[in-house]
Length: 303
Image (tube, rainbow, N blue to C red; front, side):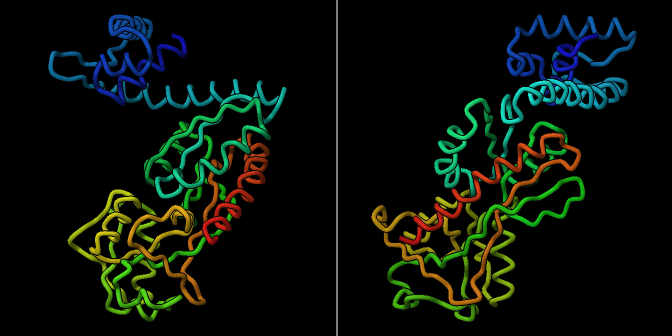
């Protein structure tokens, strides 16, 4: 038994398809299948039920897969520990970000991270919050950047910055004549929201409840850009986080972004990592570089 065979088994459990699992592991299907048969022979148990229609894991296979994930995570940490003795900011690091942050923050922070940590290789993953949390817990990610707070006892959180929401509405909307708006003015208004799974949706729903606004039940967007398009077509209004607002010089649509009077609705952006992670000093250094980039990004948006 070796680590590679365990990687093949985990991949097959997650893909439930020999060819897809082989592609994921960058080997041929016969190679993966042969190595798994070898693993079964060495353990003396059947791990996989094979037929022409589908792949099923036996009870023994599921138990072995669960332990294999722990072994692979431990092996990964052993390699990373060895690298950290040379340079804690060297080696590979798996970072996850939510879709309402990634396209706006990444262009701002990646060049600075490269300059500060030239020996660090960042692998980036963009998923919604539930998937990121699951991947972080399983050890597939080292840290994630997303909106806080998160109700989870397994992780530590580090605040990076906070950003306000703006009211995005069409230029022809009656409220567009104002320089700023109050939450009270959202009373009874329909707001376009993201679909379920986006944590930004939950933050905006909290604002809706506070302000007496209503959720538009006829449309739910998959991204902020889809929301922006719908507002530009005069289909409604929404709340837009400041980092997603284009610079004044780049605006070519019919959308106005109005600031709120105090108290402004806000969201807090931060970093999450496993409490037991030995790489905590590295995460703290990353936070020190990312934190001012978030502030810089929001400053530029206000220009």
